[in-house]
Image (cartoon, rainbow, N blue to C red; front, side):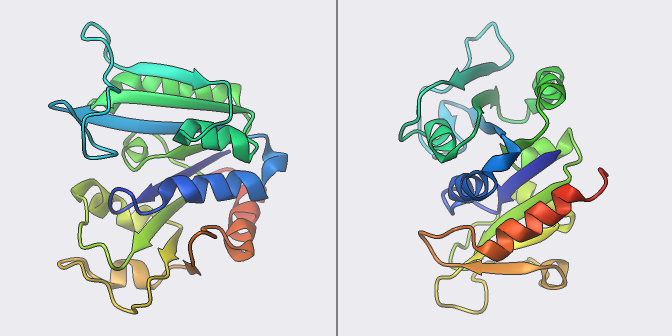
Length: 203
């Protein structure tokens, strides 16, 4: 079974949602995958150079984390994931790693992926999108995948209406929304929603 966690912008809590789901659903023995795309020397996850680029002769880089720690992949292990992988590709070239991604999915019973772009390659059993109404940025890739979300994890910042523009509320108002307050990014309701979806027949 595959769970994907995306979000409309950088640094709004996607990793924390993945960590929370792994911790509350540890019985699923997760393989966790973080996908980072980079371009022009700038990491599209952190918005600055971070040295995550693959070697020039390779289309992508895949590494496995073996020790719990403060890195995102280390946090996945600390939360209880059985495996934690970090996949890096140039921006717009994730398809070149499609074969490797499919092998990971076949090898693991339950996989959780932090990414929006992976939706171009797979159809998850559950897709959660993290929303921060105070963050004005709304990535084009996120807008394309908005209608595919099964539910939205909305970060409680004390406002009721989003600051972003040109995004039709009807696309997401009609789907389940879970209000969460940091540092608790996954409430019992979020965990139960995912657990129920994972118990349903595969899509």
